[in-house]
Image 1 (cartoon, rainbow, N blue to C red):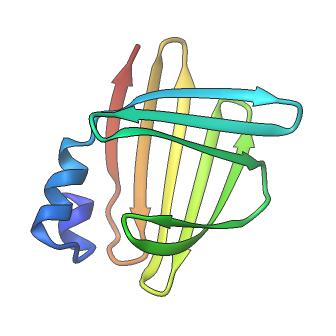
Image 2 (image 1 turned 60 degrees about the vertical axis):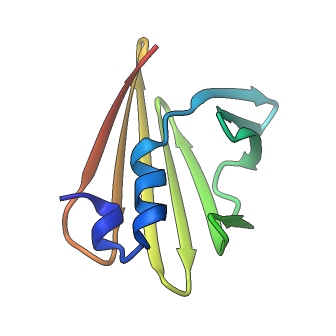
Length: 115
């Protein structure tokens, strides 16, 4: 079962998430991290400090986002009026494992990436 179906997203948004296959780059400058995502739709950069919440718009929805960096793991928590989404990215060598959890169901979605 996929997290986009259970979250109540419209079918076109669900398909967009399933087809999402970005090129990602993570960088650090002092205590600021930047995630650069490149897709067929364009390039997006998000800069953050570990543990510091900020507001952003994701897929047309206003969310409050907090990233926490702990060793080889980046945890992103997005809170909106519609619920809470937790995205955990764990890095090991040239691999990244991404898990998604939401308060709307008790499952976990996992995606694997390799450089």
